[in-house]
Length: 392
Ligand code: FAD
Image 1 (cartoon, rainbow, N blue to C red):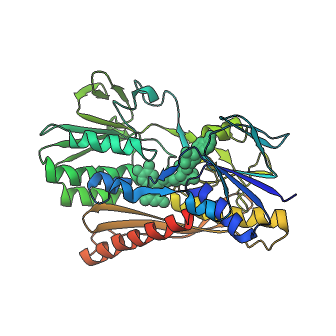
Image 2 (cartoon, rainbow, N blue to C red):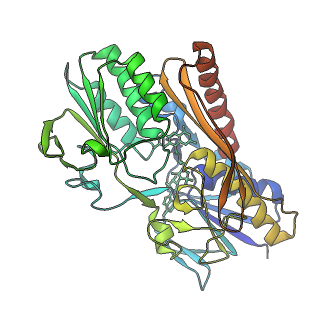
Image 3 (cartoon, rainbow, N blue to C red):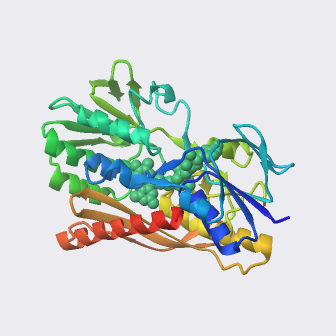
């Protein structure tokens, strides 16, 4: 029969890989995508939803076009991988055979990462770091804050998905509060001494939201934090603060199925840069956030870029089609306030050792309003383009 590719996870990496392999192999390869959700809500632009710039519907994407493109879409959880038998077990029973397996399951949280918090507390103190209901919950809590209340964030340690994500979120929460609750305060407990686009965010917070954001970095005890979801308190370096909303973003690791497949080392799955195959098994590939690949940040853009390299290599391995040298790119845009967009990005190539950065760029402080507006508009074009590249 035909060679079989199974893709686990229909997010940024998995949807792209499944779609490209089916499209480019023109029926020569049997592609199955395993994804429990019928609608994928992007984390990208979810901060803009918190800020009031996007609706939840703008973030949702279905799998209809992927199925119409020839991918067998199975809405179920993968619960195990037998690498000797080359099968994936499903929660609903049964198993799916593969010749090549591609895992792109995103992230899970490291247990015990923030003292006092575990996933059973995610309703009282949401992470909103997986798309959909958690994002809506955080927005509802933000809207329900009392006048002059306190919004707290516990930021994650490196490495984590979307390095500027927590700080874009602070900006969008500040934007919302400035309009609806201007005497409210934001405190951020951060286990890091610095963060992505720090100078740009701090400039933006000072310009647009003066006095509202109190960022407490590692040097000031920001890493020494615990929470009490029942009492709604946050303790930073022994100082207890009663808060109204607490967004806990814990330390992250590869999606659990990567661990169950036995392709992780520590928290992440090491891969070969040329094709995204794992160091543990040449027939198992890991894309996106779950992979440990070198210099690329964990982003939707990166996952999409890695998926195309992987799709090309997998197709070549199974059908003998031409394989192109691996080239990758990424840009992370962030919105600080209305029409105040900034970006950071780079191009990458595959070396024997890792995905290695070739060239990079970053927005500068003090840019003109026109340039910042153009950067924001560029990000809107990117969102439209990349989601249609992923979901058809
Ligand atoms: P995901 O897109 O998370 O997809 C994983 C999928 O796997 C999910 O659909 C899940 O249901 C499925 N899955 C998991 N386990 C199983 C299993 N066992 N069986 C079957 N299916 C499974 N990136 C950008 O490029 N630009 C941005 O502006 C940006 N902003 C962000 C803002 C925030 C607030 C956050 C949280 C993230 C942001 N990101 C952004 C990062 C981006 O969302 C992720 O890096 C990207 O989604 C990673 O893709 P992935 O394929 O690895 O995982």
